[in-house]
Image (tube, rainbow, N blue to C red; front, side, top):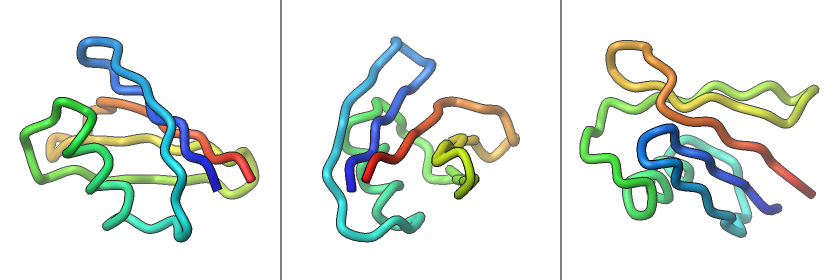
Length: 69
């Protein structure tokens, strides 16, 4: 599956190929490529729309992601 990440800070976006959709995999990609230094990141995902939000420890949306199969 392909995940398209979009970070609000610095308008960074990229695609990544992943084998399993889970928070550990998503976090690794966001920390490495997303210019994010904090570790208190959470992910929410809607299987119906194949879209998700990336939030910080203060529950503020800092990015989004979309999956493609």
